[in-house]
Image (cartoon, rainbow over all chains, first blue to last red; front, side):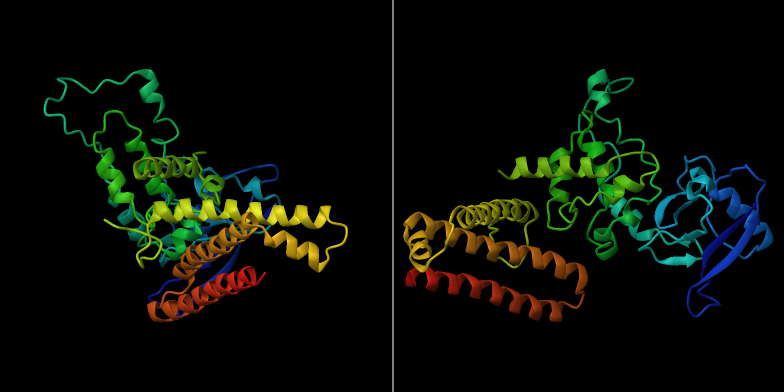
Length: 236
Length: 115
């Protein structure tokens, strides 16, 4: 079986403009493989093709890309998802392209850094071994801590495309709520103050592209809704 | 810190609440007018005049007009900050859009007072 690919190619050192390059790949009848495996096979034929990958099992979040119009991780997206259609692979939208499918994630990480993605506890007498939580308190972190920062969500969000310097983005806000919901964290007021402006949180209009593309099945829109509620309760 | 709808710097929480509150008023007004047209077989000038003559309807209409103006102000600020990156052009476009929104309120008021 022959599969057709159309892959975004752009090397700023050589190319004046990006272009789509067609490839074909022979796959045994009835055999399935992940998009990443196919890209690796294509790279063997054309070593100039560039993309990021590491764990190849949906844990590291390196190979986020846009496949047939939807962001996802190439390593856990089977080719069979697309049937017999041509597979169009592009870099994550809205991000500056470094080369081919490799994007510059500086703005994404800058926003992530803003939310202080670490536990803040001003308790002067920390427990000797660890901060204990009840199972109910721990349960609040489920659906939040699993984010692997692949950027599939933020790069599918129009608000992040237009305001990547001001809007934290779904990934960052999911992490922000992860710490707001953490009973061991004592910086709730400080965290909310940092988010209390017209852009950081409120640029989310709840279109839920982030939920649709998250390869881990998380719900950033719900987390953002919780942050909005906290900001609202704080204001009234 | 004083933040209000007249300030140039937008306040996220206030805008969030205002957009929803004004949407409720506009929806209520729309449904009320829809109900009026559906429940009135023939809309004559007298019936129309009577509808808007009551103080309650004048207040309701004024609230709906103000809601439109505030909704436009916030909504277009959000849309323009997304799509118009040049601050000068954005300021001019915003000025004219807000002027049009205000004109709706002003004309609406003259109509209401004229009744």
